[in-house]
Length: 430
Ligand SMILES: *Cc1c(COP(=O)(O)O)cnc(C)c1O
Image 1 (spheres, rainbow, N blue to C red):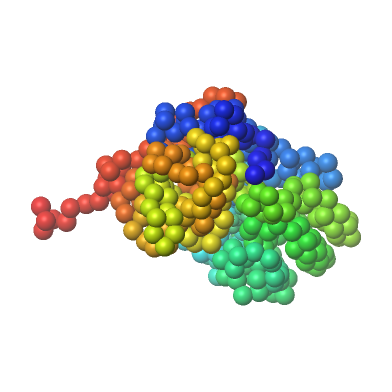
Image 2 (tube, helix red, strand yellow):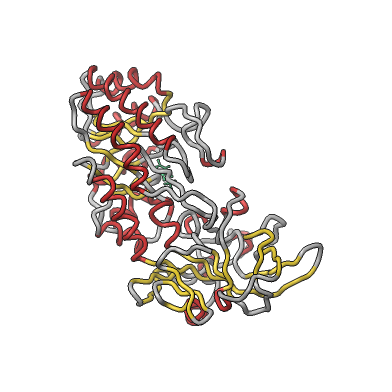
């Protein structure tokens, strides 16, 4: 199997950044998420380079929902990244990680009054998803005696080749304002006293392995930019969203790079903004493609079973990685302690959760397994821990960050105490 260069196999063991994953599993216990900080930084730099070598004003915003660990966000903040935040919680994380408010965009199709107040208070730009929200935001800004800079989230009505649950730019999606209604929305925004429209925003979906749809989205966005510029809107940024996919099937998926993305999209973008006579910043919001392949989920085989098929029962399930159950997602798996053994036996790798759907990997050829073997689930840095739960009252596992060949906890293991900490005993039970 093809491996990215931060992963390697030495003496039969899988290594990350040169560190033995079996030793990490022994030291920290399983299940365990392990992330290469160097890999995250490398991916960020490749975006920055691909875009800024073709266009002078570029901003890369990390989609914080993909990986909400402060240490990961801090590593990106240190490189100058901004963030696309989708909740007040993500906004706090980004600020705590050291990102300046002007580098943040507050997204979301259903913001609560408290979200809008927080955005106003912190001076963060807001991607507005409806006219109702526009007027609420105007009122919140008025109450605070401030002006808020906004973009509207455009629904470009594009078909995108990905899983339907992560296609966000379809005409029928819940996100954004239909592109035909966008000029009218900006006209309304211009008439709001405490709103300043400064950008436009779209995000067409996730795990897109072809750069063509991004080019189509860019065409729609620069067409709208022209109309808005003629209307008198002074666009300071055009945000094309995130969505570049990664090759979860290492040997067969196409692997579009930020370079491929930039080579396709930037010429369209440049020609478009030149036609408007403006030089706005180009913003992108990658999540998955920055962090997914940086991370392994290490899980121990509790038992094996021969039934209608052969099962490997491991200690991580959809409580820690829901993507296979939720999106039928595929993740490569490697037996970390026998990584160069021949693949002789077919296993379905199942978690400890009380649900038939708790399957991490279907019918995979692996070496013959025994209890105690360590399985590495690859490419789990995006929408992995971030979507975890305590279902079945399972405390969440720790996360380790590796920089160079040094490893350190970036999140401790939860305990049963953490699970019960927020529970209250009603008075009649005391
Ligand atoms: C989820 C999301 C992203 C990131 O998507 P990826 O596929 O992880 O790159 C970017 N922008 C918005 C608005 C999103 O909702």
